[in-house]
Image (cartoon, rainbow, N blue to C red; front, side, top):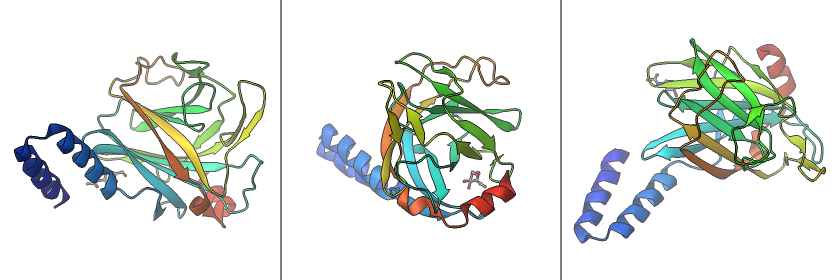
Length: 230
Ligand SMILES: *[C@@H]1O[C@H](CO)[C@@H](O)[C@H](O)[C@H]1NC(C)=O
Protein backbone atom coordinates (compact mmCIF):
# COMPACT_ATOMS: atom_id res chain seq x y z
CA UNK A 1 0.00 0.00 0.00
CA UNK A 2 2.84 2.38 0.86
CA UNK A 3 4.55 1.55 -2.37
CA UNK A 4 1.38 2.43 -4.22
CA UNK A 5 1.20 5.68 -2.34
CA UNK A 6 4.81 6.56 -3.23
CA UNK A 7 4.32 5.58 -6.80
CA UNK A 8 1.16 7.66 -7.06
CA UNK A 9 2.91 10.64 -5.54
CA UNK A 10 5.86 10.14 -7.84
CA UNK A 11 3.67 10.00 -10.95
CA UNK A 12 1.65 13.01 -9.88
CA UNK A 13 4.79 15.07 -9.35
CA UNK A 14 6.41 13.80 -12.51
CA UNK A 15 3.47 15.18 -14.44
CA UNK A 16 4.20 18.60 -13.03
CA UNK A 17 7.63 18.24 -14.65
CA UNK A 18 9.43 19.50 -11.57
CA UNK A 19 12.13 16.92 -11.02
CA UNK A 20 13.77 18.55 -8.03
CA UNK A 21 10.49 18.68 -6.20
CA UNK A 22 9.85 15.05 -7.10
CA UNK A 23 13.11 13.84 -5.66
CA UNK A 24 12.80 15.97 -2.57
CA UNK A 25 9.28 14.80 -1.81
CA UNK A 26 10.05 11.17 -2.53
CA UNK A 27 12.95 11.17 -0.07
CA UNK A 28 10.86 13.04 2.43
CA UNK A 29 8.03 10.49 2.23
CA UNK A 30 10.38 7.52 2.50
CA UNK A 31 11.99 9.08 5.59
CA UNK A 32 8.67 9.89 7.18
CA UNK A 33 7.39 6.33 6.94
CA UNK A 34 10.17 4.71 8.98
CA UNK A 35 9.89 6.20 12.41
CA UNK A 36 13.20 7.21 13.93
CA UNK A 37 14.14 5.59 17.23
CA UNK A 38 11.27 3.15 17.22
CA UNK A 39 11.17 1.09 20.43
CA UNK A 40 11.16 -2.64 19.63
CA UNK A 41 10.65 -5.52 22.03
CA UNK A 42 12.62 -8.35 20.43
CA UNK A 43 10.76 -11.66 20.83
CA UNK A 44 13.96 -13.72 20.34
CA UNK A 45 16.24 -12.17 22.96
CA UNK A 46 13.67 -10.49 25.22
CA UNK A 47 15.64 -7.23 24.99
CA UNK A 48 14.11 -3.84 24.25
CA UNK A 49 15.96 -2.01 21.48
CA UNK A 50 15.72 1.43 19.94
CA UNK A 51 15.70 0.90 16.21
CA UNK A 52 16.66 3.06 13.25
CA UNK A 53 16.24 2.20 9.60
CA UNK A 54 18.87 3.65 7.28
CA UNK A 55 18.32 3.67 3.54
CA UNK A 56 21.29 2.67 1.41
CA UNK A 57 19.33 2.64 -1.84
CA UNK A 58 15.83 3.67 -2.91
CA UNK A 59 13.32 1.67 -0.91
CA UNK A 60 15.92 -0.52 0.82
CA UNK A 61 17.56 -0.06 4.19
CA UNK A 62 19.46 -1.63 7.04
CA UNK A 63 17.96 -1.69 10.53
CA UNK A 64 20.27 -0.75 13.42
CA UNK A 65 19.16 -1.58 16.97
CA UNK A 66 20.80 -0.86 20.31
CA UNK A 67 20.01 -2.15 23.82
CA UNK A 68 21.89 -1.04 26.95
CA UNK A 69 21.78 -1.76 30.70
CA UNK A 70 19.24 0.11 32.80
CA UNK A 71 22.01 0.99 35.28
CA UNK A 72 24.35 2.53 32.67
CA UNK A 73 25.87 5.75 34.01
CA UNK A 74 27.03 8.88 32.23
CA UNK A 75 30.83 9.32 31.84
CA UNK A 76 31.27 5.59 32.40
CA UNK A 77 31.75 2.75 29.91
CA UNK A 78 28.75 0.42 29.62
CA UNK A 79 27.98 -2.73 27.64
CA UNK A 80 25.67 -2.62 24.64
CA UNK A 81 23.87 -5.17 22.51
CA UNK A 82 23.46 -4.42 18.82
CA UNK A 83 21.09 -6.08 16.41
CA UNK A 84 21.30 -5.42 12.67
CA UNK A 85 18.79 -6.58 10.06
CA UNK A 86 20.52 -6.55 6.70
CA UNK A 87 19.19 -7.25 3.18
CA UNK A 88 20.97 -10.12 1.42
CA UNK A 89 22.50 -7.91 -1.28
CA UNK A 90 24.70 -6.18 1.29
CA UNK A 91 28.33 -7.33 0.92
CA UNK A 92 29.43 -5.76 4.19
CA UNK A 93 27.96 -3.24 6.61
CA UNK A 94 29.93 -1.06 8.98
CA UNK A 95 28.82 0.73 12.13
CA UNK A 96 30.69 3.59 13.79
CA UNK A 97 30.02 4.20 17.47
CA UNK A 98 31.44 7.70 17.14
CA UNK A 99 29.32 8.92 14.23
CA UNK A 100 32.09 9.08 11.61
CA UNK A 101 34.81 6.83 10.30
CA UNK A 102 38.18 8.15 11.54
CA UNK A 103 39.38 7.55 15.11
CA UNK A 104 36.25 5.84 16.41
CA UNK A 105 35.46 2.21 17.25
CA UNK A 106 33.99 0.58 14.16
CA UNK A 107 32.55 -2.83 13.50
CA UNK A 108 32.33 -4.39 10.07
CA UNK A 109 29.95 -7.31 9.56
CA UNK A 110 29.31 -9.72 6.73
CA UNK A 111 27.63 -13.02 6.11
CA UNK A 112 29.78 -16.12 5.82
CA UNK A 113 28.93 -19.81 5.66
CA UNK A 114 25.47 -19.39 7.17
CA UNK A 115 26.72 -17.21 10.02
CA UNK A 116 28.08 -13.71 10.48
CA UNK A 117 31.65 -12.46 10.86
CA UNK A 118 32.13 -9.41 13.11
CA UNK A 119 35.34 -7.49 12.80
CA UNK A 120 36.12 -4.66 15.27
CA UNK A 121 38.16 -2.08 13.38
CA UNK A 122 39.81 1.31 13.61
CA UNK A 123 40.82 3.83 10.94
CA UNK A 124 43.03 6.85 11.47
CA UNK A 125 41.63 8.51 8.34
CA UNK A 126 39.62 7.70 5.25
CA UNK A 127 41.62 4.56 4.60
CA UNK A 128 40.55 0.93 4.94
CA UNK A 129 39.97 0.31 8.66
CA UNK A 130 42.05 -2.51 10.07
CA UNK A 131 41.17 -4.94 12.81
CA UNK A 132 41.89 -3.46 16.22
CA UNK A 133 41.77 -4.44 19.88
CA UNK A 134 40.83 -0.81 20.69
CA UNK A 135 37.48 -1.13 18.95
CA UNK A 136 35.70 -3.27 21.53
CA UNK A 137 35.06 -6.99 21.92
CA UNK A 138 32.01 -8.60 20.36
CA UNK A 139 30.19 -11.78 21.32
CA UNK A 140 27.76 -12.99 18.71
CA UNK A 141 24.58 -14.50 20.17
CA UNK A 142 23.11 -17.59 18.53
CA UNK A 143 19.70 -16.31 19.56
CA UNK A 144 18.81 -13.37 17.35
CA UNK A 145 21.33 -14.35 14.65
CA UNK A 146 19.63 -15.88 11.61
CA UNK A 147 18.94 -15.52 7.92
CA UNK A 148 16.28 -16.27 5.33
CA UNK A 149 15.92 -15.70 1.60
CA UNK A 150 15.88 -11.91 1.87
CA UNK A 151 17.78 -10.84 5.00
CA UNK A 152 20.47 -11.75 7.47
CA UNK A 153 20.35 -10.60 11.02
CA UNK A 154 22.75 -10.71 13.94
CA UNK A 155 22.65 -9.85 17.60
CA UNK A 156 25.85 -9.32 19.58
CA UNK A 157 27.13 -7.99 22.87
CA UNK A 158 29.83 -5.35 22.67
CA UNK A 159 32.10 -4.54 25.56
CA UNK A 160 34.32 -1.51 25.08
CA UNK A 161 32.25 0.22 22.38
CA UNK A 162 30.68 3.06 24.35
CA UNK A 163 33.91 4.65 25.57
CA UNK A 164 37.28 5.15 23.91
CA UNK A 165 40.38 7.30 23.75
CA UNK A 166 40.12 10.03 21.13
CA UNK A 167 42.92 10.95 18.73
CA UNK A 168 43.83 13.88 21.00
CA UNK A 169 44.21 11.53 23.98
CA UNK A 170 40.97 12.43 25.78
CA UNK A 171 38.20 10.05 26.82
CA UNK A 172 34.94 9.94 24.95
CA UNK A 173 31.80 8.43 26.52
CA UNK A 174 28.49 7.83 24.80
CA UNK A 175 25.52 9.00 26.82
CA UNK A 176 23.10 6.38 28.15
CA UNK A 177 20.45 9.04 28.80
CA UNK A 178 20.02 10.65 25.39
CA UNK A 179 20.97 10.52 21.73
CA UNK A 180 24.33 9.52 20.28
CA UNK A 181 25.36 10.09 16.70
CA UNK A 182 26.08 6.74 15.03
CA UNK A 183 27.13 6.19 11.43
CA UNK A 184 26.98 3.37 8.93
CA UNK A 185 28.70 2.39 5.71
CA UNK A 186 27.61 -0.12 3.12
CA UNK A 187 29.21 -1.95 0.24
CA UNK A 188 27.61 -4.39 -2.18
CA UNK A 189 31.07 -5.96 -2.60
CA UNK A 190 32.11 -8.84 -0.36
CA UNK A 191 35.34 -9.06 1.65
CA UNK A 192 38.08 -10.87 -0.28
CA UNK A 193 38.57 -13.55 2.43
CA UNK A 194 35.14 -13.78 4.04
CA UNK A 195 36.19 -16.54 6.45
CA UNK A 196 38.81 -14.27 8.08
CA UNK A 197 37.76 -11.32 10.23
CA UNK A 198 40.84 -9.30 9.24
CA UNK A 199 39.97 -9.61 5.54
CA UNK A 200 40.39 -6.72 3.13
CA UNK A 201 37.09 -5.10 2.26
CA UNK A 202 36.16 -3.09 -0.82
CA UNK A 203 35.52 0.62 -0.26
CA UNK A 204 31.97 1.58 0.75
CA UNK A 205 29.39 2.86 -1.73
CA UNK A 206 27.15 4.69 0.70
CA UNK A 207 27.48 6.07 4.20
CA UNK A 208 25.22 8.05 6.50
CA UNK A 209 24.61 8.95 10.12
CA UNK A 210 21.74 9.42 12.52
CA UNK A 211 21.02 10.29 16.11
CA UNK A 212 20.34 7.04 17.98
CA UNK A 213 18.33 7.33 21.19
CA UNK A 214 19.95 5.36 24.00
CA UNK A 215 17.58 6.55 26.76
CA UNK A 216 14.72 4.35 25.54
CA UNK A 217 17.16 1.47 24.92
CA UNK A 218 17.72 0.92 28.64
CA UNK A 219 16.78 -2.54 29.92
CA UNK A 220 16.39 -2.98 33.69
CA UNK A 221 17.00 -6.74 33.26
CA UNK A 222 19.87 -6.35 30.74
CA UNK A 223 22.54 -8.29 32.66
CA UNK A 224 20.17 -11.21 33.40
CA UNK A 225 19.03 -11.46 29.79
CA UNK A 226 22.58 -11.18 28.42
CA UNK A 227 23.78 -13.92 30.82
CA UNK A 228 21.30 -16.25 29.16
CA UNK A 229 22.38 -15.27 25.65
CA UNK A 230 26.20 -15.47 25.82
C1 LIG B 1 13.55 -12.50 6.97
O1 LIG B 1 14.42 -12.19 8.04
C2 LIG B 1 14.36 -10.85 8.49
C3 LIG B 1 15.43 -10.70 9.55
O2 LIG B 1 15.30 -11.62 10.58
C4 LIG B 1 12.96 -10.52 8.96
O3 LIG B 1 12.89 -9.18 9.38
C5 LIG B 1 11.98 -10.76 7.83
O4 LIG B 1 10.68 -10.53 8.30
C6 LIG B 1 12.12 -12.19 7.34
N1 LIG B 1 11.26 -12.37 6.18
C7 LIG B 1 10.42 -13.38 6.08
C8 LIG B 1 9.64 -13.45 4.81
O5 LIG B 1 10.27 -14.20 6.97
